[in-house]
Amino acid sequence: MQLLAIPVVALVCLYWACRILSRSWLSVRVSRWVEGAFCGLLGTISMYAWGVFEGSPFDIEETCRLNHGQQWDPDAAGPGSLFPLSNKCNATYELVPAYVNPLIYLGIATVVVCLGMALHQARTQRKNRPEQEVE
Image (tube, rainbow, N blue to C red):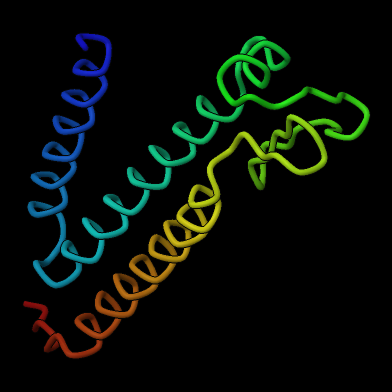
């Protein structure tokens, strides 16, 4: 349990540090979108790590046989892939849970949309800012 607590505490500290820094450097409208992109990135990285650890065991033959009750067939399974995450025991059984890849794609889309909106907000604010007089 302690091994899980250390990365979680580190991610929370990283989130708050980025939140404080983005609030001091950016306007509130822009920093909200940057925070959303950062949260989406953390969620995407977490889901990818979950999929890698869940679907890529050290001994695939033993994991398939003992944990999942499946026969391991190296010819039918083929090599695993890292994007999209895939690792099969045989031609019909996938070790990576089915919800992992769609959530990774959703996280990537969230990051792209949030960053795009942050850029749009920053550009809109810059256009609407009144010109300052030079003395």
